[in-house]
Amino acid sequence: MEDVHQMASRPIDERVSFEAKANIIRQRRLESAQRILMCAPDHFGVNYVINPWMENQIGQTDAALAREQWVNLQRLLALEGEIALVPPEPGLPDMVFTANGGMVVGNGVVVSRFRSDQRRSEERRFRLWFERAGFDVVDWPDEVHFEGAGDALLDRAQSLIWCGYGFRSSSEAPGLLEAIFNRRTVPLRLVDPRFYHLDTCLCPLADGWLMYYPPAFDTLSQEAIASYVEAKKRITVTEADALLFSCNAVELNGRVFMNGASAELQDKLRTAGFVPILTPLGEFFKAGGAAKCLTLKLVEK
Ligand code: ARG
Image (cartoon, rainbow, N blue to C red; front, side):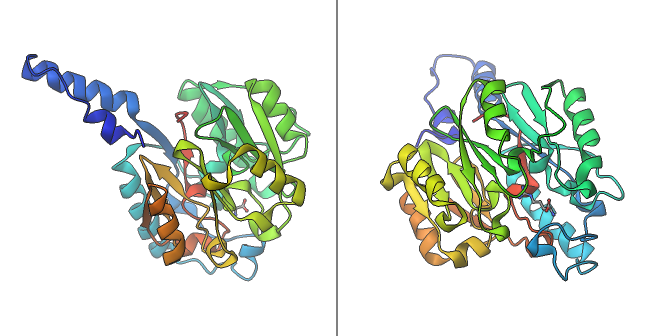
């Protein structure tokens, strides 16, 4: 796998000065750097129920533990890329899940149009952050629900967008994304309410690998996945692993950051050339999210 570590270790001409070498290394690191948007869990909690994970969890989160888990994830990711932060807002407990802020392609971004009223006030906060960060915010019709990188994921080898719909994003969302970003978009219908966002049950990995939980999709969508990704590049996970939010993983430079995974799934990932790195995120389960939901990739790669 051509990862940044390999790229960074490409031989540099020995005859150049020390400073010139340092500059080349710095430049390569900048070129390869991922940027990730996160939001500190200052106001995180379960205050309402909009997915099955949140049932019976109102007021049940431990703020100190949530912070510890979030900080651990942030520190791990900061070793692999640059972390940008959007300020947390009182009264917006789900804003920690920055994956739902929008969908970034190149310098363009579609800001989410949340299905639930409880999350709609996040739209303005994310829009403001994207505008200030210099992104081009693309127009999106108010009547079409779309929950950003929670439901729309870039394949890592092919030029295509996987777009989940059925629970949160509307069925019109994939077609709109395809038109806006001029990139083939594969609509995937989600059918298991526990896996209500695409990133809870599907994770594109480097080199065209795809980790996913097939029963979360209807038959046609499972067939669509199979038609785009050859069998040997599909890593299917069991229900038990799916319930550990193993598909809700962040892959950076070949390392797969996730809440948990069985020994079997970890082996499958290693065989595919990845390094699974487990970091517990149990407090965020209570709101229906884990590693991937807590991040938004800002650079396309
Ligand atoms: N409580 C949040 C919601 O239901 C969790 C969002 C998880 N985010 C994700 N990208 N899957 O909207």
